[in-house]
Length: 339
Image 1 (cartoon, one colour):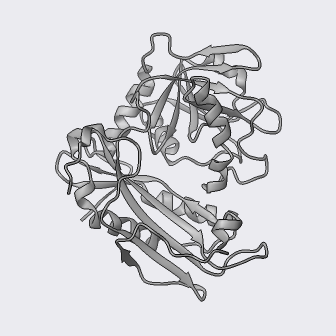
Image 2: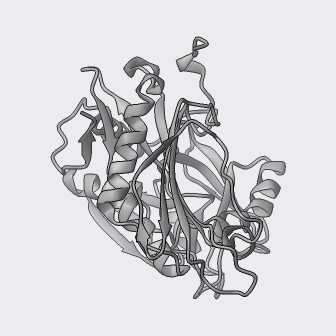
Image 3: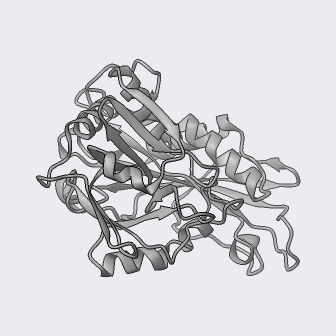
């Protein structure tokens, strides 16, 4: 194997040795299969290609100082994928089969789990797709579940540093009663144009507003948003927002630290009242927000005056990563050690 520069990995795709697959045919899930191919052989009329029957997840495995490999909260990913499958009429994979596949994929590619001191991790991508041939608009009768892995560095090149975000009111992330709470490819495809415009203007990502009233905060690029005001952790609540496992974990840790957690509709104007803020998700854990520019309203909300992450964001970030790497006790039972 070519020597990997673990400390300079990008958040991109690197081939590994194996992936694992489970096929759904004749109304039941089959046996777990191992594959060394990076390609899928499918029918040209597969529903994933035409009607968007596709759901994916993202989670990570970490090598600790003790050499053990830990997978973070995979049961929650399994349950969220089931929710997505319900939303777009796909066969639901049992939670235990999801966990079996994730652990097997990690074990088969153990040599690609970055060393502890690198700060990198093994990204795990479960994917469930409609494979059955269908020209009429209806659910497939056959599906494939795949788990592949790849070592990754930080999602943002700046690492744990505040970056600017923009509100672009001429874009909506999802429809009010649409698929926003499901982790499906179509939601991400719909965000690409807005994301590219934000990058062109010098921003990390778009802070979306609700599509109905353009009054409440929605998601922050491909992540959940949270704000810190005094001793309160405040995060938007909406049926359009993907239930983030990272955000859920941060809310629990905030409560552990004695903070008040508020999960409720959050208006745009409240940005002016936050001491600090962040976007949170599997890829970056927390990406601190430097400022939010509401371009149409010609307003700028400064959330980091010195260009550094705030004390609460820093504390939550360090605490969550310490649990993931095994440096702090896992009091909530979030981590699975790969045997």
